Length: 452
Image (tube, rainbow, N blue to C red; front, side):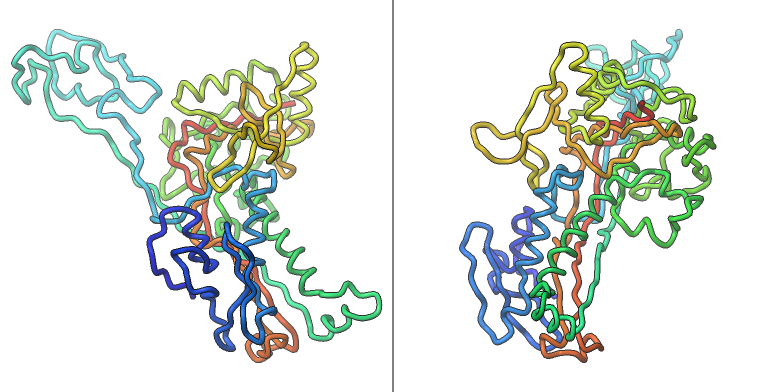
């Protein structure tokens, strides 16, 4: 149990409170063991490592949890490039419609003018060019002829709750002893902690790029109602549109069989996507998702997506894609005697950012000055088996991982003097993270798929 004693305004405050470092959590190890209160090894982000006191101090080390958290932010994967924010509320409000003129990229001026003035037209989704705010001198309030009446924007509520991601493992007392002799690996607990920590990080990255097909109950390895929605909301579910979901549901080719009546696919953050929804992202999939409708990757397709995102008010900070797509793009540019630029970037808790004048981070290719981040687990959407990985254009100002509790490591058992706590002559351990993906501006996110 963690006792919150101060305000949490930043991700650093959250880490400090969780791991018992800094001003917010100044009590060392605040996690209580079933067998009694034990101190652990803890290290502040800007301080030296200090060893805890206590007879079992070396058996339960909070620093392992911090190590996994660091892997999530330093690996070059989807999870590392989106910003991390403390979970401070269960929902957020978004402006989903203008006071007048619709919810498109521009104010909609298409209503036909007539000889009479109608005050109700002032707040319509389609406006007349002569009724968008021009009023006469000394105009009277709430007067039709003067073109004044009260109008208001539309606000929508989105909500979500943190997802619990956990992985448990165990090792027997005999295995621990045998590993320390003969040709054993030595400290089996340390080895398992390391390997399970990597797995815990890798699974969270995989959740973030889970394809839409996996959300269909027709897929043999997925049971939507009992499993997949417990994980992080995939970027594929965030960055999609009604048109794409309709096309996927209508297409019967390859592995793209989706149930059109499956609400979990179109339902996100407590709302359902529909035609023209503010939840629709910019998606380019060509004419359709049948095998014959796959299209060749061209610069025109990519440039059109960047243009559409900027017209929609988005500013893509990173492009997530697979190594095959990255190679195809590189070959395409070099064949035209053009060259991809290189930029040094550092994934941080605030998302991916560029660095000047310092030898840190890693170098990545860029396109129109947007970093291209390769993700090994990146799927391809398309019935044609030759399709290459999709491209996700992410504006990380509006997509984030809302963290309630960073990754923590728990262990108890016979090595801690408490075999009754785990009910076995050995130890049980657990990695746990509590977080969820959020998005505050869907039209600023984009996807290019169905590419050869």
